[in-house]
Length: 192
Image (cartoon, rainbow, N blue to C red; front, top):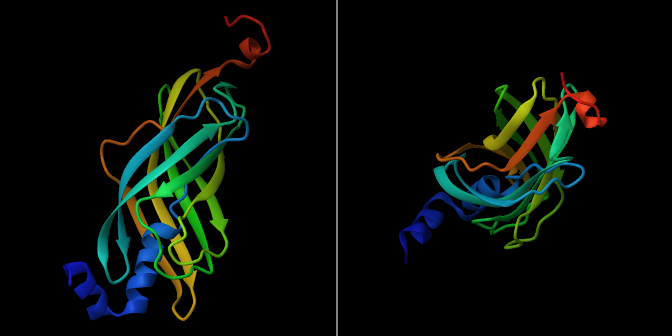
């Protein structure tokens, strides 16, 4: 019997299952309305799970901005799609919600959040999901977006609601790049 199997027995099947569900069930991604170019990313996170403590999680996904070119002071929609998580839930999840932070670097440093939710998942079903949000650039230039903290809440039968927090491990990959131009340039004019 492996050490992990012994630990599962020692803390109880339902508690372990619920903790795993929280660690992996809702880690969603961000993507935007109209595909810019959205490359697939892989990001390592450490999730703090009730009873189990810190757990490593690898998230594969795609962050898409509504456009690779945006106008200053005009909102950009983002859509984070999680393709695959490094673990699967051993028990059924009734529903989940997630909120993920996204950090923007470039001419202006900023952070914004994307959020989403999902329905029931069967045991061992690969977890995937979508989170959505908006952000408005305030200065011209090229911005790079990286994942920040993620909070996941899952409802599990016989256990109730469980919440986990996940922090990105360095180095954080660039998930998307957007160039913000003045509104005049976006309409075909020149920028003074």
